[in-house]
Length: 295
Ligand SMILES: C[S@@+](CC[C@H](N)C(=O)[O-])C[C@H]1O[C@@H](n2cnc3c(N)ncnc32)[C@H](O)[C@@H]1O
Image (cartoon, rainbow, N blue to C red):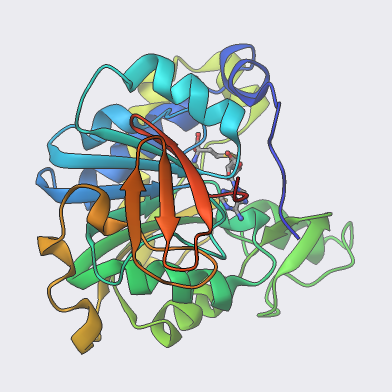
């Protein structure tokens, strides 16, 4: 099942009309620390309205992928004039990419909506080139607040248990050890972690200037090797395994990076369509590709 943001007011409700300047800023600090500044081709999985897209502008090609066409259209309004950008409506469980085409990838605030993490990470890993980088953010179930609540018997579920905790339908918190193991099983080697958003509190936001909170968070992020108890965790991963099919993926250019999300077949461009060998057709208007449903 997919957490569907089609038609959602996520941009205004969650970011613009809410007090989240601190969260936005500290996520940028973490991403800047982990993501190589420059590279051939980057994709953000679940990019939404492209909140973080300016951090990718050191790359030659930038792909924003999301299941929500409406959010992607908002991203296109902001970034569509830059010829390096492609906007791809697709499902992470059925990615429309050839193997090994991405030099870097990110996924921020998305995996908490994914109920089959191993399946999603397999798809993502396959799209990344050997030695390519993947920055993954996930919501940490073993955070200070949940640990304290459990210790005081204000919460029944045990944050130290490894399995994902679904606190609302299609919203999961994860144990760091469990998530790192899933990354490993998908052929992604975790090189670094950052403990992000320790200061996420309504009270602190009211009394401490944002700039000071961001500064303190930037220091606290580096405590990750001592233990991960923050509500959000950033991981930097490297695609470890090298398979023949992905070895020269980065050399693909233009529309050659795409594959049919249903069959994996090559696609050819025919005007505003991408067509597979069986005649299945997907809409492709300019730099906006729609791989949700065939037309
Ligand atoms: C909380 S938003 C985060 C957006 C963006 N990463 C950010 O941090 O601003 C979650 C996003 O994940 C996308 N998403 C959830 N499940 C997905 C799936 N199976 N395939 C593609 N996108 C998905 C949603 O459409 C939504 O835009």
